[in-house]
Length: 133
Length: 133
Length: 133
Image 1: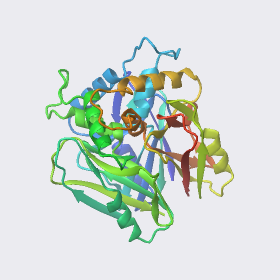
Image 2: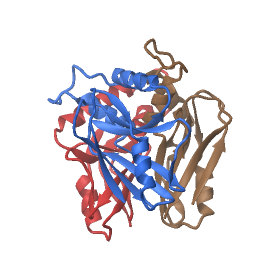
Image 3: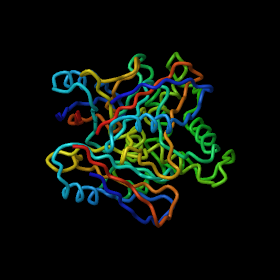
Image 4: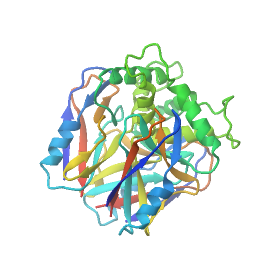
């Protein structure tokens, strides 16, 4: 069981919650217990699991990450100019693994799954969800 | 095969080794070869695999991470005040995947599994271990 | 299906692409659909998925990471002196999970798998690939 999802992003840095997209698809599949691997297909956008309640966490998160890996750096050589995006992606991870029990993702109360755009806006971003029962 | 573990943490930042808890439970299960997904159920506490020998590594690790993501930041908006905890959690990861061979975790000589508290102390932390054979 | 790979590294910090080693082995195995867990057996070397095209990305990546976690730090206590290596390893991750479809890794156009040396050079580094179908 595998599915590719596509999405459009609207800012250079953006965290887009995908929890219900992933969960709804899992609910439609023939799996009760197992794991789900959620993987970005990009090197400048990753996946993370973080707070799903206060939207200010996302703002702080992206602001702080941008301070640690600033967009411009005098020593960068990469001609495309998006070195920081690559570092942010490896820091949060290109993929995350979630546990499925009784047909549902096991997530803590405040945990949501996020597609993390670090070099947007882009109209053709995608990620894959693979289920193992 | 799935099990939820609970633990109490004692400091704001703390790395608690859980290798033997995870290994002992795996040994009691009917699995010889596969993987174990160890996942925190929190957004301010994660899981990482790192050195199990010199305890100074843990001290340095938490001190350095606190410098990269300082507790107080003039631009933070999140009212709860624990933005840094969220960043540390996504940096180390909310979950880690380990390989099982002959009923045991495959770990390098110095590798241990850690529950990483970044917003403690807390009396009701938990993580889940899921085995896939 | 499991295989241990060994490699030699040549610098203190180095990203060595292992995509074709992993892919070629998977192609020789009896698996069509599933996942591959690629895990370092070290606490000072990790695994990440990042850009496989411009080699300057690797240079920038390692330079930036070295600024965030400098080799020398006045407050470090770990006598071995490689605290920064431990932090870099947990930041990129000790392991990554990839999806397999039709006998091949699902990777985006620019995604490659890297063994990340953070305390080299070393002659006896190793990582394990485990397949789950």
